Length: 295
Image 1: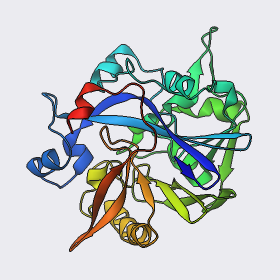
Image 2 (image 1 turned 60 degrees about the vertical axis):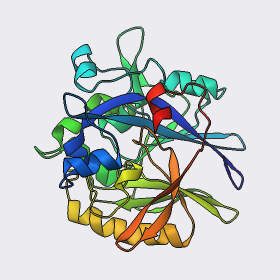
Image 3 (image 1 turned 30 degrees about the vertical axis):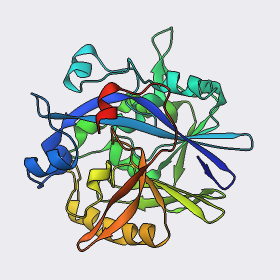
Image 4 (image 1 turned 120 degrees about the horizontal axis):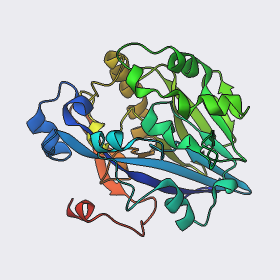
């Protein structure tokens, strides 16, 4: 997909599973199963870990990095982690890129399913940045939160995903909203976690918003569909009511990081707000999981 001078591709880093009730908060199970997907025997629903690649001129910017390769076998089972069909490395290879080709990484936030692929274990058993030529960008307020999380969200952060970046001197700390590069703007929100940054790509009258965990799936577009994982759900509600009307009025495409079935969509108005409209394909995948074709 092109947005003006930018070439955009989704980078599928793998599939995993999270508790459906936690993903949809106060929404009753029959409603979220109808809106998204039925849960498995462990009440998990299928999730994508979808990064976004933005290329222009000599730049290759990756937004988020998925779960990575550092999980233990027990953790892989708990989260139903599956990289047999998609992985960060293989998806980049399909796009003709090596880790050395990535010039910057924007981390929306430091939860393990968004930042886990930012570091890897090398042949000496040491943690190093996955992308050796890249600078990694995160909000400084969010890094402070990640280093001192609450009991509610402590399990979402893993120091091995971001402290090696700081030690290597490649972690760039940002202070609020603004354009990181011309045409790439960061929007800072606080409902899911302190100072999460959404990425808005805009050029030639077109825009795409990488929603991160504001709307992790297309089913989370309606205002009440808010995750129990969110630290401040009423703040999330306020942020959705601020951002989604603008997205609709200006015709933005919304990219959903965790939707295993829909890469992106524009918004469709309803009497109560918005829903996701017809799916938009950013990148036609060479490897398409069988269960996805059923939706």
